[in-house]
Image 1 (tube, rainbow over the protein chains, first blue to last red):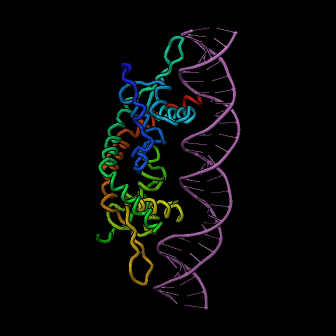
Image 2: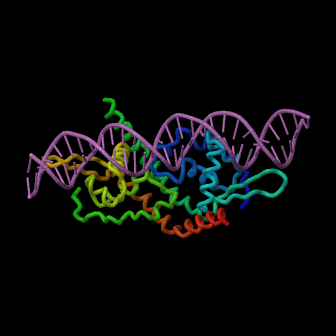
Length: 127
Length: 127
DNA sequence: CTAGCCGGTATCCGATCGGAAACCACCTGC
DNA sequence: GCAGGTGGTTTCCGATCGGATACCGGCTAG
């Protein structure tokens, strides 16, 4: 697969992202976002840290290892003197984009209902 | 909504269920199974504990409260002298069945690939 | 020589998660 | 009166999760 030239948007996963609210999760806290970062092609470790602001190296390593163990991504240590490691989706990982799209669509469609429900139940408690 | 006469299958969530392996999760550990238990109509607390073998009252209560807070299920204390509480899906909760079906389909289609990946990576470590 | 980037690892920590066990008020059936 | 079912709550506990911090060897640019 060709390298991607387009850089990752640092804001593509806003800290107040709606995805925090949906009950649907893919793997651990960062797995879903990692997969989406990789959908346009391979990325390096340090590239992934840009949009995944706040993730520490240890946690990102753990998430990547888990995804690799499940056959969803492939880790490639590139040849050459320069240290460089690429992560990319396997076909299996890519196939996960389909149910993920369904989940995103659901979240977008019902985002305000989820907000309303949370707000209503917090009002129940305070008032 | 009418009550359901058909009892819940005690084995509908086998402890070695494939769902343990898929990276897709809906809410907490039991939330997805709860939702599926409710798709045919309202169920009582003690009815839910049958297929969800191993869940303690405390944990089930917690999961149900979280689902209720998010507006996915409705809790109804039935009138009458007998103690009876019904849980049922709201329209919002019911709408979640759609992305859940997509997730299940993905899991079924890629079940053996997931198994293979796990087995391969465990062989890497031992051999 | 030195600073800095790269892709991590090691250690520690607090918060959350899920479970075990005991207990509870209320109601029914015997 | 007493056992048993119902729908929980409370307390305690160990495991896991995610994060902070410090550190590392290999490489490159100045």
